Length: 405
Image (cartoon, rainbow, N blue to C red):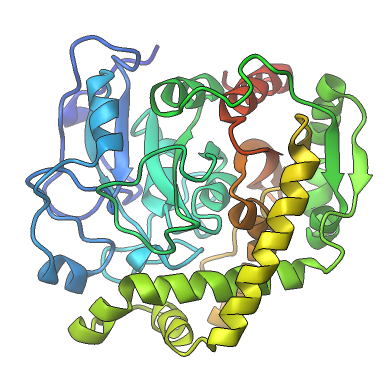
């Protein structure tokens, strides 16, 4: 078990933490996570401190937190030491990790590339070894993509499995509380504290299903980088069966997610955006403008498709099957990428992220390969309520692959 770091030794060399005084809280003297240090994305409340949600106007118009979010409280009660709050994309509405107000964290695994968002600071803090694990949140990929980009483990749990009370929302029927770790064992330790028992305790996972659309969607170099890791999973679960999961196409999946989630984002945050008239960085204002003007019939179509897709995929995975595909279709975009290039990557990425996002599935990104010198992740996805079994599978796979266990 890792030893908690002295506060004086915690030099933030990658800009992972929110600027200003560090928010720290000691954990209980004993517990399942005693000796581990952690950080939390700055959309979780910590009593007596502001929650900025990545935007100075949000911080200006909201009081300091009166209570600590239950998920943070549970980690403290389990013995983990809170070492700070990490940067997020403004209002968690972005996928690169850029924040013009607080500064974009450095990607420790590829400093010339974006760290991924919106849980950019949490991923960077873990990748830099500043903490043992860090809490993020995932609506359409905001844990899975930074995990892939920064070369760490990341989990998006089953929707609703972990409380988001005391956390700022974006799309409530999509939002999940996820976390990062450099070691598969630590990822599982946190799950032991936060997750309910699996819906089928002790049941094994398998067979393995290779989602053809997601592999075709990835760059050839990314597919090549993940070929060996895929074989490692096949040695454990048997040869993968190739399936066409979305005959309608990933573009349809992305569009359904985009419209349904935008409707929720405006319903959740639109009143504040209208009243506060906040200043936003590049891309964020455009996304809120699109959410504000989303035609109701398009959102309704997205919701209808979601119900169909959810029923299809949950039936497919009910017996324990596991999906496997590249977490992201490519390594992180370079910092010099234009906004148009970033948006193109976002569209390719969100189509894959929408698989678990629309259906409420649990997904783990494993730091499995490198493409052009930058990390790329391999995702394992299981039915809702199979989180602990999926964590155990990821730990076994990490051992097989020689990754930190």
